Image (tube, rainbow, N blue to C red):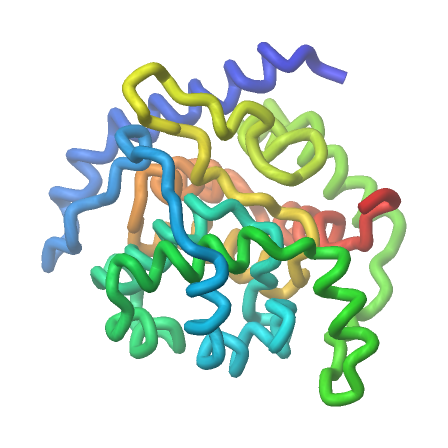
Length: 257
């Protein structure tokens, strides 16, 4: 097991090199996309989860009544960090991503709506949400095919240790040893900014969704935020086997909630 400082150092080195390249990389794109959201400068996000629940009916069409996605291509939302959810909605609304099923509903949201929705889904317990969905006669769970043990071993190895020969940093450096995000994500830098709060939790996600996200990073799709830019530089070093292994391992039911 690598020391935590070494994991963080590897992650921050990737972060710094990616951001240093951002200006020239973005300038080469035509037409110019919206200005990248620099999450290093972001303040803590707050919202009203009760109001968010009242606004979430449309979200349930794709993300399920309990926040568990009805198809494996969509993300599960319960327990995801409020900051990550909010800034994802902002990026969809402001056109940072290619046209998708999220584009029309995001365009209709106010800033308050996005904060409230993010607060609502962040407040849900993912284990309880999955249990509620399993017990709901009107819900149909997503079923994934079994994964070979060697694929799972590779996924865990990449997540825990990375692959320095391929310039792949250990994922846990930013996403945490428990896959719930950076361990000190709620720590302020002294200026009311929380630069690590928007690192997402990867636990309790569908394999197909994770695979699609990693593949998008590998293909260098549009960078909506500074975090996405960092992941694009990581993704450039991932091959198909690595993406499949990481996605499969991360989507496995955890031994402990």
